Image 1 (cartoon, rainbow, N blue to C red):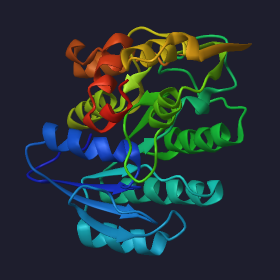
Image 2: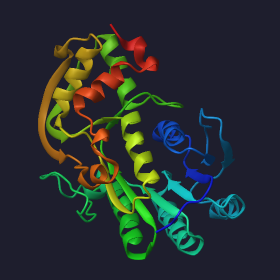
Image 3: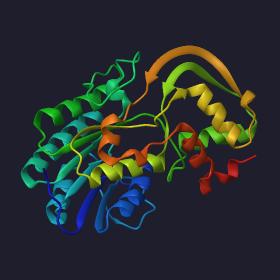
Length: 289
């Protein structure tokens, strides 16, 4: 187990993404003393942190930054081509084993998407059918086989405002404000978190130096169509704008048992709290009717 002394030096690969935007805030809230270094490609993060440009194929640049920065925590949030991502993941595993930093890989529900019939627990082994899911599953399997000091973060849908591009939440609210109707399939079960709630949980896991697989999701769940109708209504839009589509059964409930056991019940959130948090995000206020 890695023991962190003094300042925590946190390297975030993919620091301009929308989850990274919230995660940096959450880490600053949870860690008394930390220094950040982030990689980006086409956009810079809104946060005032040290930045370098590199994509997931440019391991030579990343290696130089790891050598000079000497991180205690590395968070891999890159997307990019799958082959490059697999190579980068293997490099980070080897570097973590050699240098002793805690390596954190951002996975997703898709690593488990071959199973859409039951809810998902943290001891479920990666098993994917989609191309994206197979990429995430491949990285997870390599971590479990070879890494000594790591965590895997799995999560499904999250809602909130995003920098650099419009989030799915903002695109949905934009459509509601326009008065357009929207067709949503039935049968899709998820337990959604507001993005800031999710990153608070992630920061708490990192503070506890959690090892292994962790799930992030609300303590309850609902069908996609019901959640979106509730979200639309909270912004003052009629539920009738959302029209029932075809039935497409999919169970994407990510049960965070290990996560809550590690960080405490104060991090438990309901989907009602998710909607409340999204409704009160200042940068989404323009969509209130």
